[in-house]
Image 1 (spheres, helix red, strand yellow):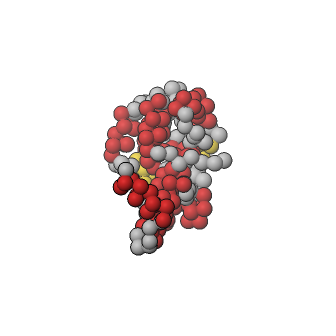
Image 2 (cartoon, helix red, strand yellow; image 1 turned 120 degrees about the vertical axis):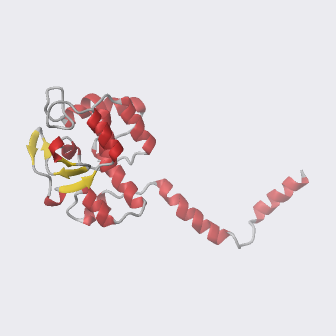
Image 3 (cartoon, one colour; image 1 turned 180 degrees about the vertical axis):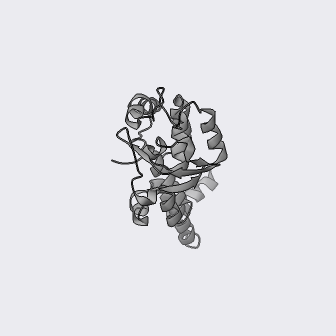
Length: 204
């Protein structure tokens, strides 16, 4: 499945289109890069101040361990995001929970809320995993170390981070090509056609 690397304004638009707790779930995924199964598997007891211990996931509505040993990790949650999550807190142990107190079901939430929202917005989202891909791609473009990004995402191998989560878009070619053009075109003779065009404009 082809993954969409979202622009910040697209993430905001999706969040604004969704009711809670789905809006905050989208923002949480976009900020942290957690797998959606890890996100809905978070309990309030997993926090030590602002440090989150990612230690389980929900897969096919069942609670289990993380995907790999490396996926069991500690990450700091930005205070603004944690405040938003805390504001939604209700009775129960799960951070992202359904009305009956069980963890959110990603498949059900995707079909009932996420897909209708992105369809309305005209955003070709592939699914929850696109938020994870987006964060990884952006961090690598910002030249953060591959090892850091790999450990943040809970990958067992940095090759996974580079081969699957690093996306190149046409716009990424613009800066290097502009720089190359500036180097090569600055000190060469003008194109005859351009010189003729400039002369014609001066006569007019």
